[in-house]
Length: 501
Image 1 (cartoon, helix red, strand yellow):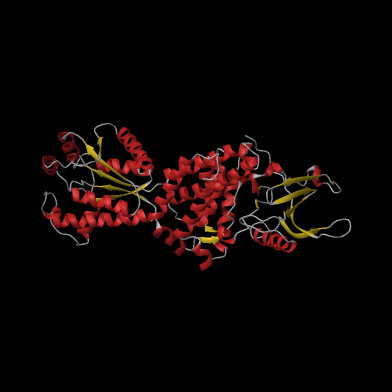
Image 2: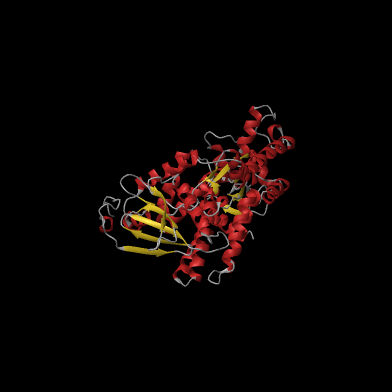
């Protein structure tokens, strides 16, 4: 690993006064000329689906817009708009004038060289969070954070990807299914992000190739300027772009580190599912760009396009919101399994025992504990408890958080209600039934420490006689080591994401 200090390019041969050796780089929309300590960016006189640079006036306006937008994050790097003229003084072609940086201090170069970049990512996250804090907001910006706007962008992107011959159609189809499933049930989450002021006029093209790390501090260049609506994004979406690119370079650890820094500086409570969703979106955007490059005669770009789509699919699967029912009789280890499984999804656990205790303490339900179908466990009280459990589950699921329901779930009507809720909120359901011999369950109950459960060995026996473990759930043998039960449950949850087509 290199610890060579980053340079700003001042000692490069091309920075010596009078050095007129020029380098020219061409993109499909412009030309960049590197000359001495400056970079000059010109627009091509072209028309595409998303821009029109036909006239000098249009190119002039585009150059000035680019400088104005990028000066928000890199005022010392964007020096203004100049004009190139021919020997006869004609032409006056507008160009963006920028400070030139050494290639080896690009963030991408540092990452690929194995240089320690943790402190750079911390500083970039701090700058980005501050930028978002002061960024333009308002109704026009907020509109692009709605679920309708988000799904429209996804659909347009996927429609275009389907036209490229280098992309497997079943991959795009699976991505589309998972995207539609997520957005369909998360309207409350997108609305909450708008209400929290999280939608901003951001950068929207945050790539490691366009960030430089000179001693004076990070220079974050080249925001998206050709379409204002596409630059109106959720702050976590903006940050997810850089995280995606770091992961694409093989450094998922740096992606996670950067996002942790950003969320801390931005005080952003975004659920992990939303982060995965936006990482996937940005990977899809890059896949489309690579497909365009492949169509321009660069076959290696097709490989990168497929890699980006695999990255997108991975995050959509891991970010799928799920409803997991963990049932079984008292002492079968259902609560232990539920809480051990939760960090891996990740998920919020809603326990019938906890809810029952809260409702009893609040006086909502009354009765003595310890008797089946009586006291706290009358059918009326049980119905109130399950109503509250499902109410809490709905809120979490709608806000992008997976839920594990921990209870006996012996009533098939209550299980059907849980499945209906999952369908309404557009999440796959997984149902587990914890199983252990009755004598083992009774022994566990007798040796319990502090718990909110009021169950007794007698209740466990009575429930066993009523076939409390009935249902269509996957049976988990909880007499084994906990790690084995959790491994089985995780595997089944992963399969449910793919099979819920």
